[in-house]
Length: 308
View 1 (cartoon, rainbow, N blue to C red):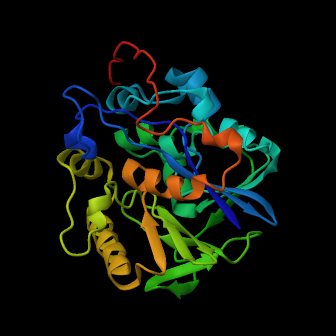
View 2 (cartoon, rainbow, N blue to C red; view 1 turned 120 degrees about the vertical axis):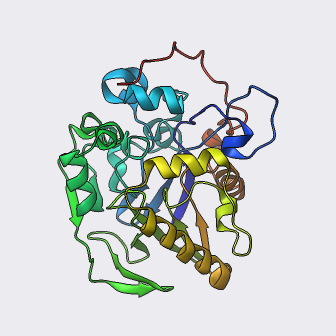
């Protein structure tokens, strides 16, 4: 299997270094990526998360919460959407046969409508919460407009009744996908949150979604987080105890198996740039010219939107 690392729209919340931990000039906003994976398999293309989609870029206000537009300030560039990056690789949207979601937050599922023929693999608890929208926050994080044309859901109940994987329980393969792609429950950020593990010839990759946000949180000896991302995780968590427990389990995975499993999250630019750089030599020329996180030229920001 061949894996492409894609950043499907950068978010630029205020806070600078206090948010993303990177040194920059005063007043320059933070940069949080939307790290998705495109996997070439014998069963067709597989996307792990989608980032923001075409309609998010073209018509953001009905599809995205004004609260999160103001807070996260995504740089809505059509060329950064998954479908446009896939086209530059020489594929078509219809070549994407499967999408595996870590969860249904707006910045992970915005591109679902760009791939209407794909089967969407997701935890059943995540779909239930997204449809029920029981709280004020749920109604802003889960945006049904983003999957209005998506009919092909494959839902997995908890417990999954699967196997153990490096100490994680209820892990199993996914319907119609090769056994090298697994769903790993990592509940806490949302109640149907999961990681996605992919086996390569030289070891495993684990896309941990929003189980953590900052690369130093995975330091097994002295974990730390920036103040901004610590606060954001506290705001967004559905079960803080389980979220922190799963972070500790991920650190233990790194401590014990760092040579066998590479763990990364959805929004840390340092992790994305490192993995993308390693794979860049193998990418087609069409993708090599794509701007890195730091090189992207933000569009002129729109006036602030009053939160709902």
